[in-house]
Length: 310
Image (cartoon, rainbow, N blue to C red; front, side, top):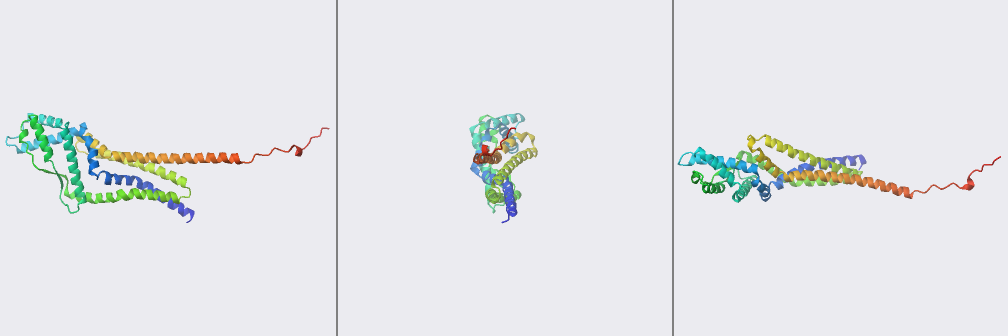
């Protein structure tokens, strides 16, 4: 193969490898990180003690209880004076072990429902979860705290939609693409990088270029995560829930941010190590050549011209 064609092919392969590295990390995170129910529940579990998340849950659940009580109790609407007590009781409930258990149970139920819908092509309905177990625990806590009309709060198996049916097909197609890309993109990046370095005329320079490209890809991935966080929080209609949404976003993208830093650190480390190795090799070679060079012979006194004084 001509050297120019070989160099061009190596450059193309290395460029593809550097481009696929951040996209492969993103696809693998979505396909294997978010799609694992146990890992998802473990990731979300610490948020049960986050103050912003607890406030958001207290507001949402408290408002839902008030709507249920106003619309379904025989005694009429719940007194306005009781509303602060309801929120306070719900806020107090979020500090208990029962809430943490309910939080894990709810997250597992939601994740299982969404994952089943995305993998089941025959399911064409809304993705729903049953909140009756959580409502029952809240009702018991409110009744224990003697909140007015707490005993009248109905505990029914209400199916709450978390993903509309019209969006299931679109998300299902994207999910299957991610499952395929999450495996093949990282593998393709490694194969292209190895092939490009093997074809390069100067493998040391090719390795350095690949390392710098990987570091650049890691920096781009970290920037994309930060930009996604900004856009996600900006699009929220309710500003009071932004701290809770930020905590959830940060928890879900922890692995992705760590991967971005890993790519950046690994790429820079390999590039610097390669450069230092090259410099050290040139220095050692220079010293060896100087030591092996023959010394300049001293001039023979007998061959020197003799000056005769007059």
